[in-house]
Length: 379
Picture 1 (tube, rainbow, N blue to C red):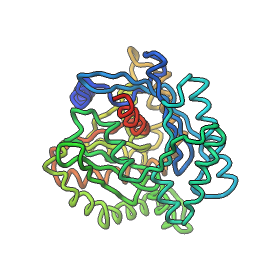
Picture 2 (picture 1 turned 180 degrees about the horizontal axis):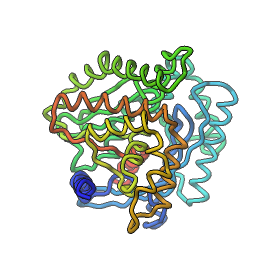
Picture 3 (picture 1 turned 90 degrees about the horizontal axis):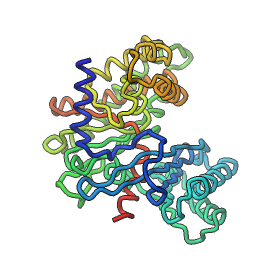
């Protein structure tokens, strides 16, 4: 009970009475004019986020998620079938925002992610992006519709501005651990004039793929665990340590926040009873124990086991069970092992630089850029 009380207190301290972090509630609290939507074409597919926004002159904006859905279309394979699936999903989600949620077109923001931009440039397939934008505009009958292709600097800065509370913006280092890479940064000068970009070529999927490749013919979990240890250590020694040490975050960033799928999964399985908390404070030791559990005692993070350990009372066990199911639908054991291994290595480097740093896992960071867009739009 003491640990849970401390966690709750730390959460309150970080959020500081200002719910900028996305909530998972689907109950509408605001009127239709306060609804906004963001549609993003990412490396894996197309994602729609519908949010409710409330302007607060004293504390800034707060938002809650009304709808968060996606279609896996694998756009970056750059084939005609995946192009068609992406274009249809893009237009379909736009129509969903318009008709199901009655959101005016001007309140629907559409972007192509930096991951798509980078992959297209790497393979010299930029014309596929232009073709997609043209197709989308035709399908939704908006020839002048703005579809911004964001670069990694923009995306990282927008995510920080959208996820981190205004009163924590200048002392928080945010890192989004994605599938293929990780990105983030902080504002070193105490204002929005300059954002320091932090990048790693490692993400949950790329880490898992590298370990699988090193397994050779021995596909056992034991061998995968051994190879994952080598991959994670190599990533830390060759890239992570340098990136953290040269970031200059030591005197500025008191808080290190992680977003992305593995942050959500880890927070959900580590503290399922904090299901309604959009941000969960953790220690390096917490995540170290979690990585050991998913590696050596996977049954201890299953839905049945975790729900059985939650006492009766105020907890909504059905809601908690549903969220745990969502995690396991997205991440299998090996993906959880890879993602938590990468998370640990990044945390360890920040911990070695400054023991006093506090770590946080952000559950709904995927809508961060949307709220930043909206924040600018409602000024």
